Length: 351
Ligand SMILES: [Zn+2]
Ligand SMILES: [Zn+2]
Image (cartoon, rainbow, N blue to C red; front, side, top):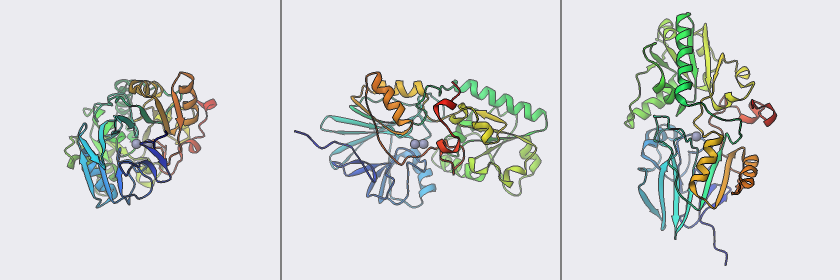
């Protein structure tokens, strides 16, 4: 007797028919359970949302006046008899893996995740399940992250060097996640942190949510240019190449993204420095996270799904590729579609 699967992949997104809810749906639905507040996972238009409480203020800021219920990690809620709970995904503040259980069958939908503890968001926690739905944004062996501490030593040395040479420092990372991770790891004995409005709006939302962040100074038309030039300017990808950014010149411009591991990515963005900093798991992180779930089946939603599914099958997993509309929050510019934008292919990788 074949029974209906607890989770289905539909045109609206990942769906639980028994519980009548979607996870990170890409079309408006009645009940949306949200893994995290990035725009490709938390979309506008659904009737009711359920998310982790640390996603609350950013979701309200980004999606407006939505009907939102929030829960804590480990807390359980029932929806039409199906148990939903959330566990840390280690991706950005408030990010959660969604655990769904019904009659002893357990699915975990990871959303986006990172296995390294970044000290800013709750660290990733493996959750045992039968079925694991995983992203694989960086599911190629070329992607191996340096420990964060080493990476930020490079960032701080670069900033110190710029400050000593009368160069302004502009560091670019997306506004939810990367920006706070950079902010919390800067050496503030070098100078002050100045923020682009898009980043500061997100910082303010997080502070309203009770998150304590280092001091920042919002850049406004009144901000003396020379003050910002003495500190470090934290900007989102959308600011790259704009007059807003150019007015701080001469500067050194550093870009933070996992894609910086690929040869040519820095040059294509005209960045002076590429810092390989990602809020996604690297190759080893993905493989170890999947292994730690003890799952019977793994479904790959976005990233290098085909090649990664092939690899997992070779080492004994029952792995499947699933088509979804999740995007790439590490894309090198907001309009970029990562793979097209930087012409990424395995041959080009810096192995
Ligand atoms: Zn994300
Ligand atoms: Zn994603």
